[in-house]
Length: 376
Image (cartoon, rainbow, N blue to C red; front, side):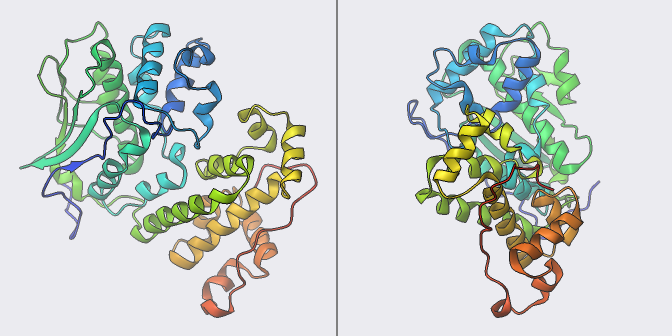
């Protein structure tokens, strides 16, 4: 049995995800939905068709700035159910969720001290993903329980929404733990579908249908497990960095803001300028021209984000230079060292060891006029 960690955030009372019952409030991002649209595209479904009648532009799926309502998300799920040739699409798509899909916020979860801390952070921020199910987490005796309620009366969409959520949770927990995770049992309020046997394939536990409740139960002793990448200081630094960055974006041109927000959610795999242009439905030439008009360049935006994130990690965490290089979007630590010295005039190690008053202030590099290269 795993040894509990002293001070682990094991809840004495249920943790309730903040949830809005306003069906038409555009308050939720598209977080997590890329896995669903990508899985459908692989099944031969035209992604544009998924958004017909929803009021959501197809390009919104890769735009972290877009906000949608509960009603729009339900309409999107309705199109998924109508168009998919694969009945288990919710299970399949959910299993593909990755920590990196959630950018720097994902690192906050990954760096949590224990599984209890990671779950608490996830539930408390669940509103960011615009849940169509009301979700809570609690511990009863030796059993930890994820529970959801269908407060919107989803009807035929309930199995799809449920499968996508539980499969996503299973995938994210396994990525945080870096090993396979098995629950004790899954209780569901609806009748077993024709593909019920596939639940065990993705969710790795016995499933009871027509149970009257929607619960995923597992051994509560696992909550105290120290996580492989545990570093609470890093977790806090990630969350603080993102909060400040998003506040700073308010006064910037819309195009620059969209690029920065997209990059913040993809620091581990930064897109080339050509890929960014495609996501924004612009030609590369138009993207570069509009950035020049805004007084910057694509590479300058990338470098500015990397510099600020690297300095944040150097000043507020004990991550190694290699780890900071990776989290700042560099595939090679030597390239990171060269870039950091270009930005600040100092090596990362010297910067970290210097008294705060003697450090070179963070500054954005000048716009680069040449062809953008994939960073790192």
